[in-house]
Amino acid sequence: MKIYFQVLIFLLMISCVSKTTIENGDYYEKIDRIYLKYTIKGKGPLMFVGHPNSGKIGYEMTLKPLEDQFTMVYYDSRGTGKSEAPKKLEDYNIDHLSKEIDLLRKKLGADKIWLFGHSDQSAVALQYAVEHPQNVSGLILTGTSFIGDMDETIKRRKDSENKRKSESEWFSQVVEDWEYMYVNKTDTDKNGRNLAAAPIKWWTYDEESFQKVIPIVKTISDSGRRKPIDGNYYSETPDQRQKYLDIQKQFKKLQVKTLIINGKFDTNNAPEFAEELHRNLPNSKLILLDKSGHFPWIEQPDNTFKEIFKWL
Image (cartoon, rainbow, N blue to C red; front, side, top):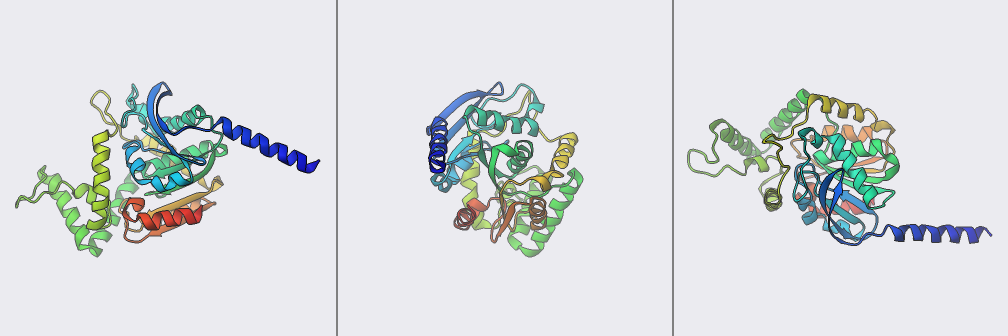
């Protein structure tokens, strides 16, 4: 009798899975009163990935190895790529981005999802996990850290930048070029050297890793970053930052399994603050990859996916 009931439960599970099976393809559907574009590729449990500023295309180009183990849901967050922009600027805030994920999850008929979060999207993924832990199977986070208030964020960035300048002649030149651009409002120096790439180089480890990143960045820009509303661009408010700092206080209670995989030379997320995030997430593992900046899965793809699959 016991074996009979075990078989019956297994068959019911298979039946439920088959009802939520999602076909690969491109979709354009209304989510939270906004039409969102998303693409589904791969097989296995659902994993959502997008970005509030750059959308889905960069991940669609670079996360293909995950499609062997996950049904990847690459989505253009509101106002990015081919998705519609909201009516109001404040509808870009993280609360709406978290709600967007949950409504898309429900649209796809999934009880649980995985989330891949990079940079700002890692904060969205973590807030979603705090708000809906029962709906999250796991998190893979990269280019991230435990953050402070706005003044502290600026100080951390400057300290990290100064440390890297003292260690790398290449990076020191990148900072000098970016500062020259800003002060003189030009893309070329006095000798006619093109400086336009300096702001992107700042996020990478060296010239070789920058060359891997720049084609992706160009494609993202061509596809469409987050759209302005009435000529104004969204930026985080102090109130929104404080709300997220309060969310961070709940991380210690979060039991969702989490992989944090950062570059050791991510100027915006120094290793000590990635380690602080790891300490605050009780069911997490931290990997710091050498010779990588803010984009480890692009700058060091072999090592990144090796670590991800080993963790899985």
